[in-house]
Length: 434
Image (cartoon, rainbow, N blue to C red; front, side):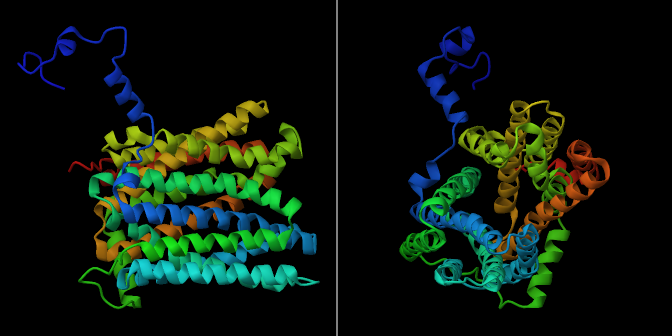
């Protein structure tokens, strides 16, 4: 935009905006309202990683549905299904710190290859167990632990790869594309899982997941090596502690972790969806409640082009997290299904925007030799918040009722985010231009 009186000032600028939108203006507006696919066109290795991980994550979401389904089918116990998730927590959190140290010490592409191959072996074990005349429940628990451990080992390498594959000014778009990929998998994977379980059976369902790793391994093989930073040192407890100290020394990083935990702890009501469904139309609407946040996430990522023009990323995280809480409040007070779904769509979209801004802060400011360890810390905050949030919402619901639990959680989420913004001024004022 030129200054008034500048000789380069165009006729349109002197006259001001007119009623019609010029074609170039329309293209610009559409560019701001659509996801930027530029990194996929320009960066070959990022494109390979995006495609391969998109396919394998899609398969993993199939197993995400199939494994608890099989546990319930074999035992008829919801408690057993809940214990599967509890069994995963410890290994996931422990492996995240180790995976972060490994990601900083070794070739991150090689770490991805090793863990993807191990995931495929675990999926094959589930196929074999499902083919037995009497499948073993203990195998499901064992594989839940193994898969959670592999997830903790892999994710830091995956998160630390992206900044090495794109330019700094492409990180916002790359983050949006990564979340878009995950959202597609979260919607399409469970949907296909339901069809496969109903028509092809459990062995075939697990086999589809196994087949997806062929694509991801092929894509990783075609990528160039991503060696560690020159200053990288062998993994050790000291290196893990160094990453924790570094995170603690920066308010902007701590703010991203704290706000995410606060939002998920107070405003994560998914454990209450079955009970809420009974008041909103019965079991038939339960799937809609689970799908609504993912739909909001998909809308947010598909229209995220404007986020490249936001520079106050800390404030963006806070506002988005507060909007998540507001969406949960709307869900809690909704008089009918339509309003409830709208609240969850808003919440899911806001959560995705918060994730995009958090990811950009991490990728633009964390030194490469620390990215793996910091990604491990992020995974701990990402994993514990929702799990503890489901526990919190269930406890409050048992004491004060369903609606009180949901609404109070949303309100406390907004209040907690406000407190974090006030007590972490460097986080709130973070500006990428500085």
